[in-house]
Picture 1: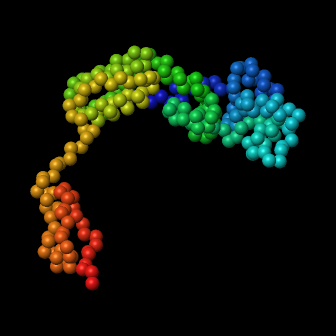
Picture 2 (picture 1 turned 180 degrees about the vertical axis):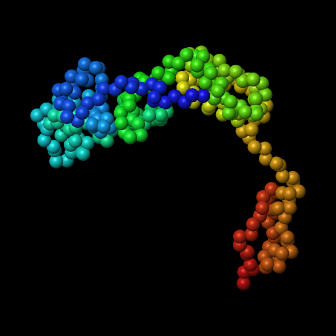
Picture 3 (picture 1 turned 30 degrees about the horizontal axis):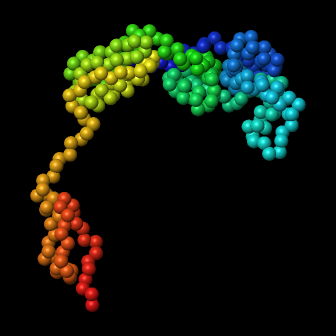
Length: 268
């Protein structure tokens, strides 16, 4: 099974700017290319920051009100300072949210959610820009044809089905919805098969129609014999009397172990 990474969906012809790019150049670039952000790189193509539309809007948001307030948060103070910025180096957000080449699309999606961004510059091991991936790019995995998804599903099922396949397991795919049919030995095999199938890129939903012979969700507990219960509940009356206990010994509850935590002695 092929694991889809950002390399499969990212845009490789990336437009970037230097830290010396002016405010007006940035506005012209984003509006002409319909970009929402652009990465800022140094002379070695290493990503040093990202300038987004939100960064550019600070000049409009705080126009004429650039002076910091006394009780402002650090975030608000930094945003107000960008209203006076003139270059990409002064406007960019740093350190930028990045992802490395070879990162799975699932990990990239989690990074976008955690960093609250819509796109991620993709860099190599040296931090050099090699591409950019957006939310829309990650959705390309669901544009795969059904026959490719089916081939990956059958490949992914080899591990969980190994040695436990009673009847051949088949997968039918219709617009990303996978239906699994067949018969296996244990319920746990069907559970692993479902989880492995959901991890295939392009799978929207999985319908489980697998049958199994043994339900291994419940571990059988060996029933204890009544004699065993009686043995555990038995109290040696002679030993109790020798210890100085006065009064009748309480009847032990069947099936439980009576533990003596305190010895009542005769009141003087």
